[in-house]
Image (cartoon, rainbow, N blue to C red; front, side, top):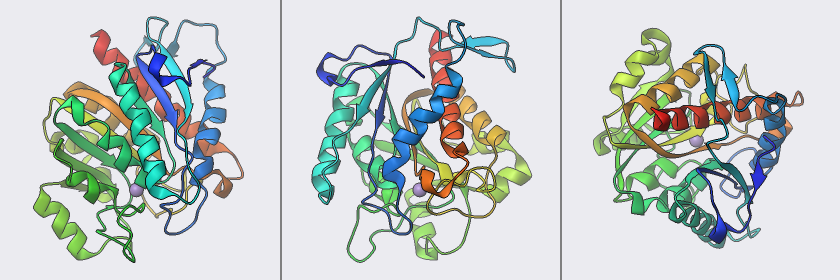
Length: 298
Ligand SMILES: [Mn+2]
């Protein structure tokens, strides 16, 4: 978005701090999400054309993201190739610094496992309800002994004391989760809203099912979106939500409670020769930042 850059997080002054996590060591199928942040940054240039103060939303006849709000690009977290645990510690430390400076962390993945260190870093904010948009449940306890892969983040989050309540929206597909994973998620208390349910009953229904909470954290796996719309991801799953459904869901959550941060993960540009996935992801992030800050203005 041509926003200012701050890579010294101890001196960060911002309302929203965008952090890239070019990491794909948690991938269990097709790799490439380590190029996600670069691709989304490139896509964000498309929205930085005008000289308006902020972005005009013709649907709502409102300006978003005007200059009263400081949005800063913090560069990328330090990834140590081949060292999963050190990389996770570095991601967590970066997000902790962002939170300590009073900014809202907005994280670009990376594969979905990076949500584990990001949410670890939110423990000072009090109980947080997590809403996931995804094709996959991501509740796998381990694969071949690996508990920190892209198929496990929601189970790992459910084990964190400061995570209180969970909704999983857009779930569908075959193969990635076992029946026992679904049973374990339901036993934990997670509300699972399938993509088919959203298509039949609408976003207002989905919003009504999300547990009430003071604070929300959103984790948006791009593969929750219909892969007919955005192909740039490693594990596409037929069906899925469209732009308006996801956008309205994000808007609706900002009316339910305070959104303390979000991530957008699993963008892998090499599966999309058109380059559209990064443009789509950037637009979703920019609009969601706008909705979060608009709720603060109100
Ligand atoms: Mn996922």
